[in-house]
Length: 93
Image (cartoon, rainbow, N blue to C red; front, top):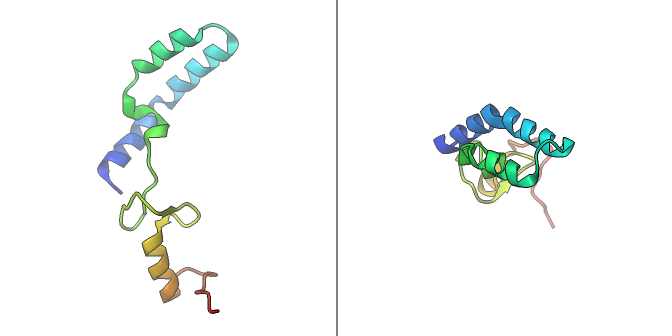
């Protein structure tokens, strides 16, 4: 996994409680949306969990990610062909 993705995950975990507090204040009516935007803009940009990207656990490839297995399509095909993924077989038709 790339170092920047690890950094983003740590920041998201560190600032998650602050984001929840802001969301709770907006929901209760203590804070309007404009104040919430200002409060969120003061947090680090990479602390937003939306900025995290799924990556292959083996190669770190960001594209072609298969969520069910946590690996990229290329690694999935190689591992399935070798029989390393239980329950997955190559189609024979």
